[in-house]
Length: 206
Image (cartoon, rainbow, N blue to C red; front, side, top):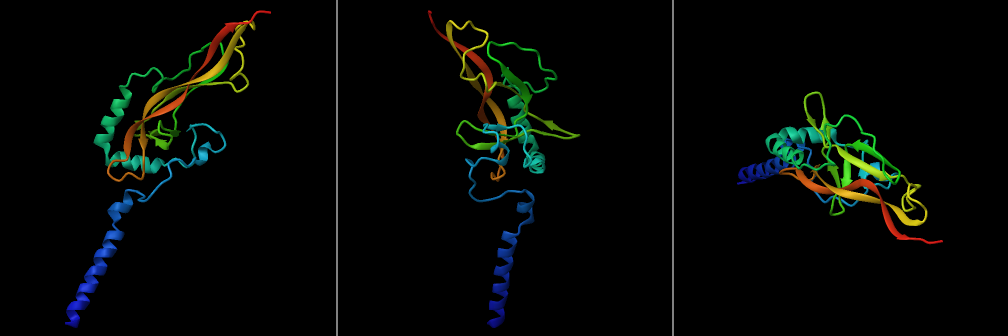
């Protein structure tokens, strides 16, 4: 009777230990539990932007392993994004054409690493490239120069009421969530700066 009870206790201990220390689960890098998606990442704390083009904490290794693990499904998702036909999605563009607008602005073609989605949550954007594979999402970003935003359009006569305003557009991009166990990739919308527009009001007479 005592021997039988001892064997049962040992078996229970083994089952619990195996469930908590499953190497297959740990290798995937998943982190169960609640996560604050509204928390501002380190890359954005000094810029006050809703996106990051540089990120010292970007999970390159985790993104690569997740792509390898879910390659077939991820590849279909990536193809869907490439086929979206948005003129502001310019993956593969090599040079920046000279552009002239009524309001001074700065234009870059960058690959966001983190951004706030349409629901106000910070997400990790898939932008991964190595010697063997390339999964990048390049976006055209144009921002008003700070000294002109909100002020009159400098190339319009002062007799007109004008103002330089920042405009944004939504981009569909693949995001990565390390807290999603089954499939950590999904397409979401992100609102990013697209142009510095000159709005004209009435005529001011002197």
